[in-house]
Image (cartoon, rainbow, N blue to C red; front, side):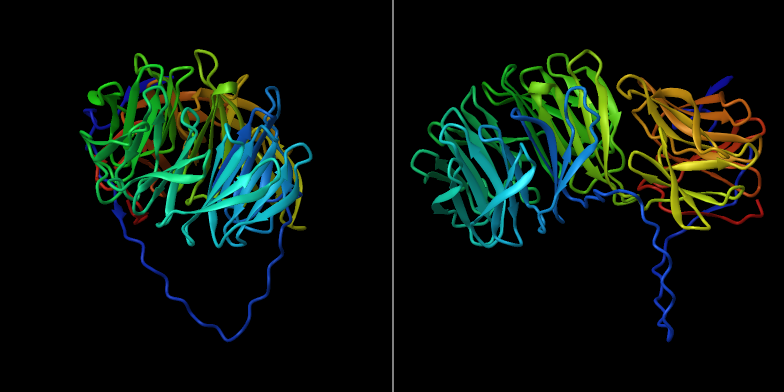
Length: 583
C-alpha cells in the first residue's frame, strides 16, 4: 500500500497536466405547459408501518422513562427505544394530527407535553402507554414550554397573543394567563430562585413561579435567543440580538436584576452560549466564528480563545457534572474537556441542518443530535455515550429520507435505496421491495467488474469505526467491511472502472485522507493524506478521477494513483462541475 500527501500545503499543486474542467452556474429551468396529462408511475411501497417523520425536530426525554421522544413540526411524535442496552429503534408513532412547536417531558408525572401552534392547544401524552390522553386549550399559537419543578407548573408562551399560560400539572388545568407585552422568543427556568425568564422582542421578563406575575422587566436585552443560567453565581447571560448586537452579552443578576454589558472578542450572526458552573466558565461561539471564547463567570472577564477545526457553530452545550463541552459545527460534533480544552472526540453527524438540535442527558452520559439534511433529505437521530474516556456512538435512528439517490444493478435488474438504517432492494419488474439489506447505507456504488456494491458502514461495539461495506450483487448480502478509520467524516465512495477500484474519504484520529479500495481483493491499496475536508469523487470519461476537497479540485490518475493537478479554485465553495469529455 502506497502513501503520499496532498492538500493546500502540498508541493504537488498544479503539477504535470491540466484538465478540461469547467465550473458552471446552475440556471433555473423553464417550465413547459403540456396539453396532455402524463400517466402516474407506480408507487413503490416500503414496508414501514411507522412511516417517515418530517423535520424540524424537537427532542424530549427524562428520568421517568428510557424512551426518547422525537416530535415533528409537521405532525406526530416518534418513540425511540433509549434503554441502556436498547436498540435505539423506533417502537411507536403517536399521531397528533398537528404540527408540534415544542415538546417537554415532565418526569414527576411521566407525561409528555406538546404544543400545537396550529390548533391553539397543548397535547398531553402518557409516557407509560405512549398514548394521547388529553389536551389543554390555551391560545392562538402556543410554542415555548418551561416547567417549574418547585411549583409543579407548566409555562407556555404564545408568540401571537403575547401571553404566558400557567398550567397546573397535577390537574392539567389553566391557573393564570400573564401578558408579556411583546412576542416571546425564548424561555428558561431557574430552580434556585423559582423564577422563569422569558425573552421577548422588547425585553427579558422575570416571572415569579410563586405568584405567577412579572417581577422585573429588563429592557436592555431585546430579541434574545439562547438564554444561559449560572445558578451558582446567580447570573443570567443574555446574548444580544442575532443581527442588531450579536457581539454583546448582557450579564443579569438574578437577585437585583442589574445589567452589565460584555463585549465579545469575535462576532458572528447567531451567538451561542453555554456555562460550566463547576469551573465558573462561560463559553461563547457563533455562526461565522472559527473558535470558542472563554469567560470567567466570577468577574465576567475574557479568559481565552480556543480555535476549533470548523467555522460555522450551529449549537453548543455544556455538561457541568462531567466537565464536557459539546459543539455542533459543519456536520460534526466536537467534544472538549472543560479543564484542558483538549478535544476528547469528534463525530460526523451528517449534512448540515438549517435548524440543528443538540440535547444533553447528563444522568445517562448522553448527547443527542436530531438533524435533517436539506441536500439528501435524510433525517436521523444520533445518540452518543461519553461516560468513558472515549465517546461512542450508541445508535442511529432513521427518521425520514428514504427517497434519496438510488443505485442500480443492471445484472439483476434491482434498485437500491436507503431505508430504515440499511438499504431497500427493489425488483424493477414488480416494483416491490424484495429484501432489506442491513449494515450498509443508501449511498451505494456498484462495481460492474466484480458485481459488488460498496457503501459507508459503521461497526465496532458502539459503531465507533467506519469502513466500506461490501455487498454481494447476486445475493444482496453483506460479505465484508473494509476498515478505514473512525466515523468522524463521511466516505462519499465512487467507483472507478480503471483498475476496478473504489475511491473514498476517511479519517483516523486527527488524520484526514483519501483511500482506494481494490474491488478484486476488497482491501485498501492506496492512501493519501489531506489537509482539508473531502466532498466527492467523480470518474471522467478521459480515464481520470476528479476529487473535490474543500474549495479545491484535484485530478488523479487511477493507473498510478498519482495526483496530476491540485488547485484551489473557489473560496466560496464549488457548487457545480461539468467536463468537456475531450480531455
